[in-house]
Image 1: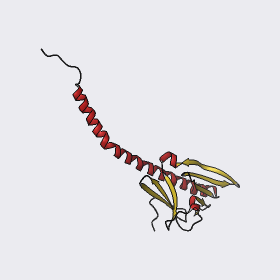
Image 2: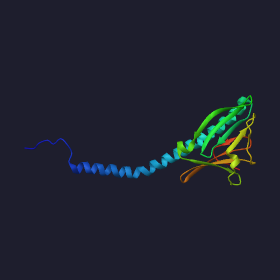
Image 3: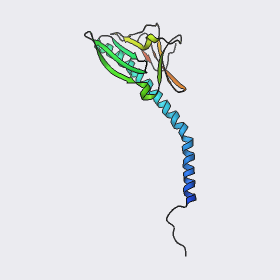
Image 4: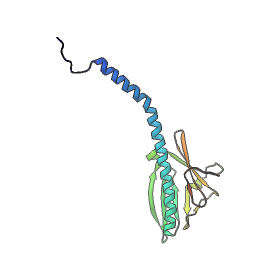
Length: 162
């Protein structure tokens, strides 16, 4: 007479655990790559948003607005109104949020420390200490992406095409 068993044998459970382990081992690097790409895009969008906010605030308020890139990979926007500086976008540390590093570059490829600040005038034109376009290189691990700001204040998220 046969009895019904109501469970799994140890061998069956070990085979299922081994299959799950193999699946996780093959997916972990892909998940990490996807997460890094997502963090890089999010940081790039945050920088572009801050630049766009500064430009829009300058045009809307009819006064200068300033984009600040901090040494701690943070972005911030403030504007002048009736002689007083008012914060438009509070300081956000993109290094802490997304693990990225951001550095300014000029069209010659050299870093220009003065380009951590871009002032937008009431027409929305951007001005920096260097001449020409300013490129911000955003790096995460081995991956990198760029945002370019022209002398007219236009924000190019696809790099500095010449």
